[in-house]
Image 1 (tube, rainbow, N blue to C red):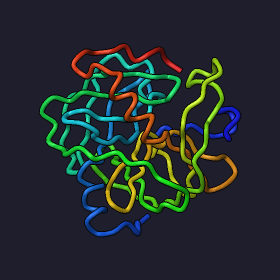
Image 2: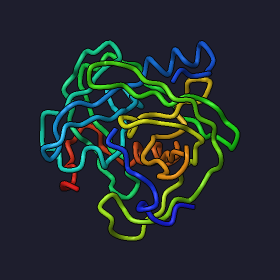
Image 3: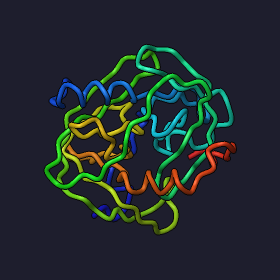
Image 4: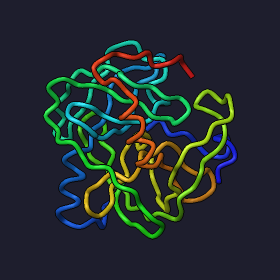
Length: 218
């Protein structure tokens, strides 16, 4: 398990081996985020998980007050508003009215599951990284502010990712979302993703029609 988030590197935010149809679905529902958070330009991924609702990592949006945009793979931008922010799970939800991007399904992945992480850059460039689920874990440690003692269901992934992948979705080979990337190992090609069960629970708990504060700067 991950004892603390200090043991891994939080990300700011390549060709994959996912099946043809699954890869097409993954590319269709992956998005990027653009804006400025605490005087730092956002570079992070996200994924549409409901009509006009994007899931991403909370730490990339901590402290944002406005000017957030969702970037589609074709580069088109849609204004977004934070409607859910969970510093313990490291998940955030953004509502973007009029976003013309289809929603992906959520699915639970077992060890050995393969797929791709799809990250969309602010200019619409799509980057893809192969992964394999090494194991399901109960990730324990601090929240995104280095405080508390929290736990969340997560996936440990064999993956060699780059800055900009934080908040991006890990898609199974059928195109379903199995997790949201929130960290990587400092010493080996391993990434960590919040499990789909946590994403689903967060969606259920959140009123996506009501703006929510996005915490404080980190």
